[in-house]
Length: 382
Image (cartoon, rainbow, N blue to C red; front, side, top):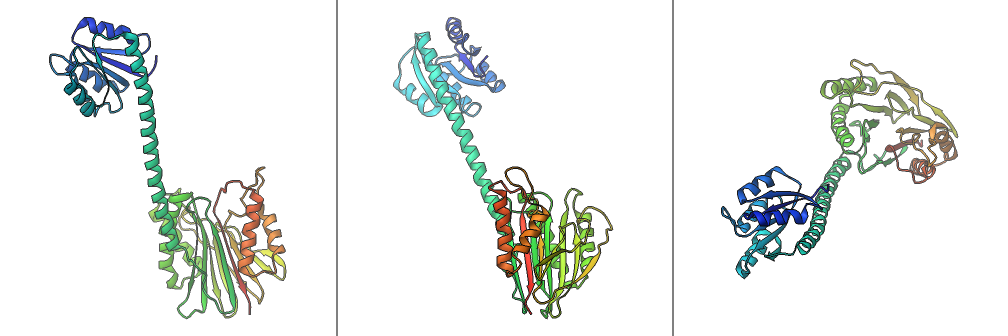
């Protein structure tokens, strides 16, 4: 049985039976002999697609009845039947009731059936246009929300690297979607003697991850001036996340404090991929593990002391680099990244980070990115 239902309304039983016979072999048919009875049917049946109503009825006119149906069934095809021709009634029906056709009795059943079928075609098109319009509005609203999220992220993430005497620094940041869950930040002590570098990866994707990262970045910036060690900082952030957010939200983060005068650094890690130290063309993974923030209460974090000699480059990257896949489903993996770092070892941080990102994208071969990519490179020049 077709999903469209036809409602026929006429106070004369012979006409009502004729209308019923006209449509019953093609559509589901509901019948009413008064306007009030028909209104009740309209309220109870959402599937009514066509309403054929007599103009002269004892409790209300056909126009009055159809006017009552406008809000209940805005896309229904409305047809008025009348035993006389009245131009004023015709114009009122068309203007105030969205009447599709005005048919004078006696009607020819095949002609009425054809009129209804044409009306249904117009109705289906109107319904499709309404669905399309609502989807367009939804997408426009989503685009506005994404733009707001992008603006928040632009405000939070540093737009340029700090100028560091004796050092070069560069960042490549590429979200997998319109907004990303990776985060990074830099900070200098008040006397510019010590650099703080943070790179992180928030659980989830797109807007939720970006907003969660925004909240986390605010907490991070509040704590940075307090001169805590990297391990103390991660432990404090972990407790803050445990106390405020659900267990399914977590943040992986690597945190470096670097003394710019002598190249001595302290590194702590909470679930991020191990950093890489590039020295005289050789690459070493700095293996310092740790649990992501927000997963386990009272977690402690290890620290590792590192040293940057003149010419050394430290690389911190999110797992979007090694987790990238090509069209055959193969991962870029750690070995490819190590090889890429070695082949570009003679470059300064900006072209080095750019080439690392470029080779990951070329390997992916147009495959949609599954995760954000962030690469930070710091080189000691003197």
